Amino acid sequence: MACTAGKDVVLARDKEITGGDAAYGLVIDATASETADAGLDWIQEFLNGQLARQGRKLTTRYSPGYGDLDLSVQKLIYDALGLGKLGITISDRYLLEPEKTVLAIAGIA
Figure 1 (cartoon, rainbow, N blue to C red):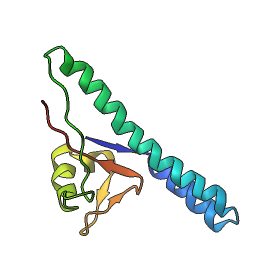
Figure 2 (cartoon, helix red, strand yellow):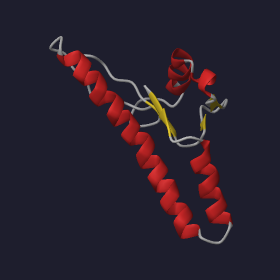
Figure 3 (cartoon, rainbow, N blue to C red):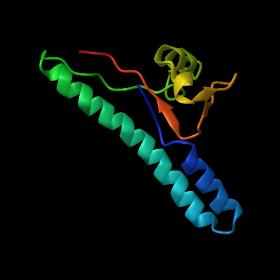
Figure 4 (cartoon, rainbow, N blue to C red):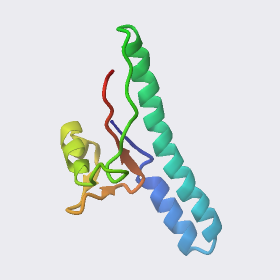
């Protein structure tokens, strides 16, 4: 699964940080991070609603770069979801653009 807060929020953050209101820029940054993560929460809740009809549910989600899930897994998820078609890019070091984009995997139990 994937969620992005988009490029506009990153541009707004950078404008505030360089334009003299760094504190507001940091609030934008934190809010964008929470928004992207909340998007994954929504996806999980939606899928759990669908899976509940079968008596199943998603396991805990895992994001590349956290815990033991290597950041390189990000490229596998990126390719599997075809995120390039949505204007999301990935660097050779597995960093996503727009910056406030998160990917995750979960199993089905």
